[in-house]
Amino acid sequence: MSKRERPNVIVFFTDQQRWDTTGLHGNPMGLTPNFDRLAVEGTHVYNCSTCQPVCGPARSSLQTGLYASNTGCPTNRDVPNPGLKSLAHYFGDAGYNTGYIGKWHLSDRREAVPEDQRMGYQYWLAADALEATSNSYATKVFDNNNNPVRLPGYRVDALTDAAIRYIDKNNNEAEPFFLFLSYIEPHFQNHLDSYPAPIGYQEMCQRNLWVPPDLMSLSGSTFGHLAGYYGMCKRLDEALGRIFDTLVSLGLEEETIILFTSDHGCHFKTRNSEYKRSGHESSIRIPTFLYGTELTGGGRLSQQVSLVDMPATLLDAAGLSVPPVMDGRSIMPLVRREGGDWPQEALIQISEAECGRALRTERWKYGVVAPDGDRRAAHAEKYEEAYLYDLHADPYELNNLIGKKRHKIVCEDLRERLISRMVEAGEPKPEIAPCSCTGTKTGPHNVDPKELDSASPYESTRIIPSEIEPR
Figure 1 (cartoon, rainbow, N blue to C red):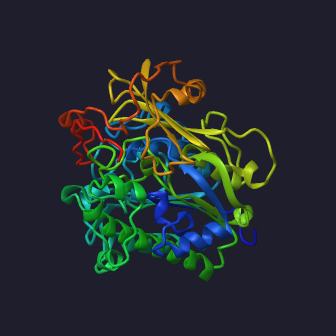
Figure 2: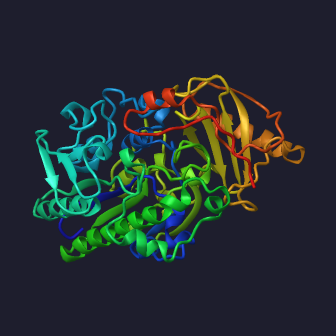
Figure 3: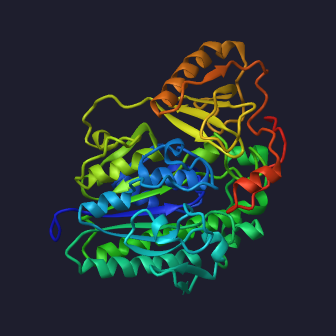
């Protein structure tokens, strides 16, 4: 390192971004030239899944390297257990200046976050429920003393400007910095149930709209929302370019690690009556790359990687030890082509819409649901098989194979593998009942809307009882 012993680290974190918004994952609209370039030049984590397709639980995992069942935050209404160490603690203990900008979503307060709920971040410019304190052109966050700060511009740009100021200021410090930059885009604006893109961007995307096969087949809210959603993704990519340009102008691009990832995807009311909380690719598969130091030139990784693996990866890439308490593991051995034993599947925990679990392998998606369980619970004693998809033949999961006789052996194998991963994650060994259905249901389960709304004070979701049949 030319200026510091250890690299700087930036987490560029989006909210509710599908993997196939990016060119590298087949989107033909040219929304993400910066993502595509940096992922090609860096390390593209091609098969990255969230470990929990709900905002707060996913964020608790990314801060700690623990599954949400172990953070004390299995739903949006929860806060992480007191005393948990976060990325801010680990990097701070190693001499880093740590900063957080944007959406937090791990507090029991909607707006200003008490200092004891910030998990160790030194510099603070954030709001817990940024969707509640701001609109697309009116951003309000809170500083270290919980004074309100209003930032001008489109919300993506407002947070990006703040991040650039932070990077510039810390470039003059002797210590490296760890910056967690957390956007709310392309998450919907709750009180409007809309996806407000920058002025003119929705119209631009509408003229050249590409609709993924699952959204084309199942419809949902797709045709009212997708163009605005894409416009938000495009502006995020422009922000990524601005952050990288800042690093280049300061001579930091070779000594700064960048992680780009998201908390979960978006299915546009096709799998239940809101936007996520399911085990389908549209909910769980997220765009992810790492860039900088030895991650530059890492190529495309095809292994199954989870969001819960990212904290260990960042520490390892920065030359810090990975705490044994973490459930996730560093992907650096994969980057270094060191071989070794890497899991052949990713575990997904699902809450609120259902108490469920899913397993994603290179070929299969296998999901189970607790039929009578508390959807807010960290885990259940009993589950039933709910879906099986062949991702080779059906990558957009339109043909549920669960209950088909010819796939009985596949389900038996995946059932045992899922139980093993659940136990490995610290859950009690569950009972999973084979499916007695005919394989027609694609996902959603009966949910009382009032019950879910009560469980999710930050999100204006309305999940209603419904069943979606594949077409």
